[in-house]
Image (cartoon, rainbow, N blue to C red; front, side):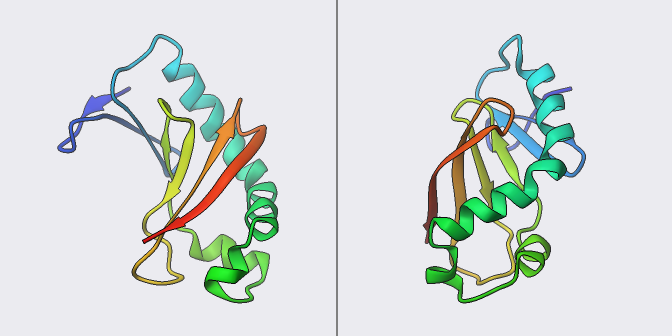
Length: 114
C-alpha cells in the first residue's frame, strides 16, 4: 500500500486522502484504511472544530459548506497524527493543520501557518 515518494516519506492514497509516514509501522495500513473510511463521516465535526478554534479569524466568515468545498484533499501524517490542508482555496499563503487522536475521534491544536 505504501510507496516511497520524492519527499523521502512513505505515501499511500485512499479515498482522495494522502497518508504519509517516515517508516511504515505494522498498524499503519489498517489505521489508514480506518481513517479513510471515517473521514467523510467526521468532516462536519472537523469543520465545527475549526470554526470553534478561530478559522474565521484567519479566513473570514464562511459557511460550513464553503469550508468543506475549499479545504481540498487532506494529507494525514500517521507518525504525528496530524491532518494538513496545503491546497485549500482560502488563500495562497497559509497551510491549515490540526492534530487528532484515535480514528479522528478527538481534534487538537488547530493551526494556520504561513
